[in-house]
Length: 299
Ligand SMILES: [Zn+2]
Image (tube, rainbow, N blue to C red):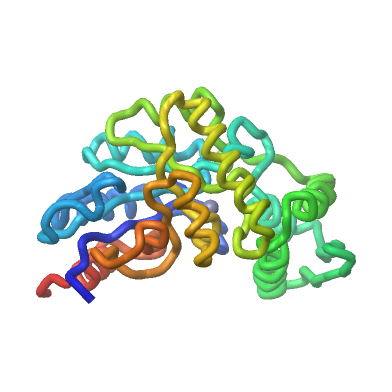
C-alpha cells in the first residue's frame, strides 16, 4: 500500500445528548479538541482536495451526514472559527420535514418509559420486543433498527407512522432537519460544500438497481435545483455500497463517493469507494493518535 494521502472523518451532530445509542453526537468541547488536533498536526482539507498535494503532514477532511439543522447552528460557526472546510451530506426528502429521522423516531419510541413493548409487522412478519429493562430497550433498539435499515421507504414509513401515534410522541427541536433556506445558507458559507446522501437514506445494496438509481439521482437533482450549483460528492447511506452501486455513482456524475471503512485514503483507492473514519467516540488525544497512525507519522 502506498503512503496514505489523507483521512476523511465523519460526524453527524455536535451536542451533548443524555442518550445516544449509536453515538451520533459529539460534545461541543470534544469537537473543539478535534478541530485543534486537525489544525495543529495536519492540513484541514476540502473533500475534493483530499488526494491532492504531498502527503506530509496529511490531509484531513471533515464530513457531516444526514443534514440536521444542528450543522448550520452549532457546527458551522465552529468550523468558521477554526477555518476548517467541511462537506455536509443531505437526504433531500428530509429537508424542510418536521418529522424526526427514522432512527431518532425509533429511539424515542423504544426508550419511552411508558412503553412496555415494541411490536410491528414488516413484510408480513410480526416482530416484538419486551421493553422491561434498559438492557432490553438497548437490544430492541438495535434489532428493530437493523430491520428498518434494510426496508424500503413504504415499509419503513408504515412502521414508524404507527409508532409515532403513541400519545407521548413529539418531534424534538434539537433533532430537526435543515430547511430549504437553511440549506442554502449553509452552502453559501466559506469552505462549506453540500453532497448527496440518497433521497431517503436507503441501504442501497438491499434494493433493485432502478431504485438505487432513483434514490441517488433524485437527491442530486433536487439538491442542485435548490442550490443552483452542481452536487458532485456522495456519501452512501449507512456507508453501504457494492461494486454495482459504486459504478452507478460514477455513471450519475459524482466525482467521489464515500463508504464507512476505518482507513485512510490512498492514491490507489477508487474515488467511488473512499473510506471514512467515524470520530464521534474519540477524545482529542485518541483522535490525534488515530490520525498519526493512519497517516503513518512517527510517534
Ligand atoms: Zn446517514
